[in-house]
Length: 398
Ligand code: TTP
Ligand code: MG
Image 1 (tube, protein in one colour):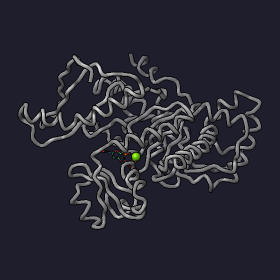
Image 2: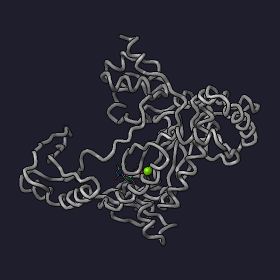
Image 3: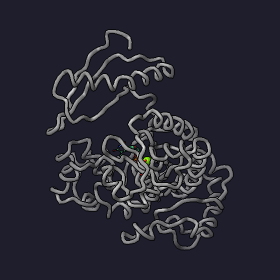
């Protein structure tokens, strides 16, 4: 059993180039783009009593994301607040941003302002044609040192360095990198084997392409985003959040373990507050602690799927492919309410949500020709927060 589980972690394919994109302060950026005079002012976007996000001017003045409005105003009295409860403009912006990105590779949407892209094919094309080695851009996790021929194989950060000097501005080592790239490009053009083994180098070329993609997004849509580049989705997502806003970071496979080990388990995508608590009870606070736990223990505690995911994730392993899931299978609208104890109140809530849903169904029909088959109402009750639902097949066309 143990053997089978560990085998499931799969072969690490270091030859992929995965880019992860996250739009900077998305809703706030959308609002500022519509009102350029707010460019240099602190701006927060509100939903109910929360500032769900704010621009980086506001963040520098001490306003965090998801702050209660009172608290945000206390920290930054000049904060300009804009109501962001109508998501229509954000959905529209998301669509055009994703359209630009999808020109460069297979795109998997991960929410309104995030996407993972497999850009391996485009990188390989550039790799075997001409590469402008003078235009490396972004940050690099990995200690780029040594003589030119050894640069990529020695790109490791010690645990102590991983948070600081481990993030090396590529430009600092430009001369050495250029030498290495030139020699590799020369060899690789004649040998597919060299190309396959030089995953690090593919990521470097990927960095170059990602800079171009971010530039295309900004030029064509106005939006700035940050990006991560790595050989899998997990590492690319983690890299993406390392240097924000409007920056990109590449994690080399050889540096991944040292980078991951000191991180809080909470940094692993999918580990929420509840799982963090359970892991704490097991004596697991950071990724390094998790690496010491067997796959059987993790599967015993969290079930096979999640246990196996955690076992892989803490080793920087993520064999999952980037999948273009196409149009969403369902459309939903939701809201949280303080008080809903009667059928009458429930009807009012559904009526207030319906116009947005109907507008989106019409838009979806124009794009895909689909009409909905079923209508589902889901709700959570304060206290146990368990999701309950009732489903009904639609008897008429909406
Ligand atoms: P995020 O990408 O988490 O945040 P952000 O884009 O505002 O900022 P960052 O630069 O750190 O990426 O979320 C995207 C948008 O989703 C955000 O602008 C507002 C919205 N949002 C909510 O409405 N509620 C939430 O709980 C979160 C996390 C985000
Ligand atoms: Mg974002």
